[in-house]
Image 1 (cartoon, one colour):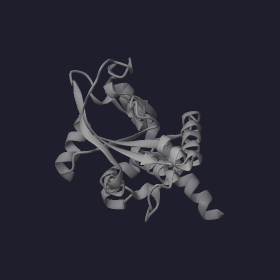
Image 2 (cartoon, helix red, strand yellow):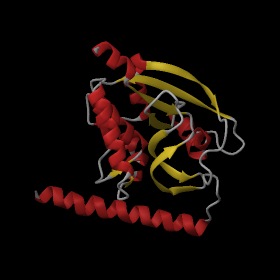
Image 3 (cartoon, helix red, strand yellow):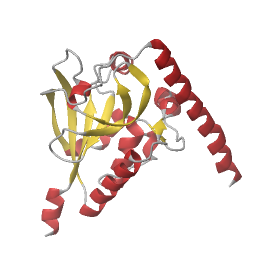
Length: 220
């Protein structure tokens, strides 16, 4: 009975060869293909839970996101390269993961940890109150799965390290074609003024949380 339970409970960790300008630049500097990461809860691989931009032309309007394949193979792109790990989890841990994703999705105070992402190669990841980027969000889910031993805090793993961490669970690596447009407004254009406002809003929240929440932690 236990064997059957394990066979039916997996999460799918998905590495994405992002086709954005930022993704292409990151590949030039890192010499590594994958620059985005998400998690799926079933083998349909049609809902990718992550932290990311909400619209293609608005990098600072970002946070928790349920992406679809057309967010990766956007615009005129017909396909995208994905590397997928099929990670076994117990029924109890699968429920914990689903509860955690549900909690985050229903809490609008979560924001994108932009500072940790852009300083990853120098600072190697740091926490900000109720803030994630794609790496820390998926790494926390991997931690909840208890499928692998993690030698450092979840928020300190970059995508390449997650790739190595999950190597025994490699499921497939291939180009995936988009079948239809599911995220209808993803390609809507966002202008400079609105993007500037998103940038200011995100930075203000991050700076406040780093200062205020950091001070609260020090005083405890």
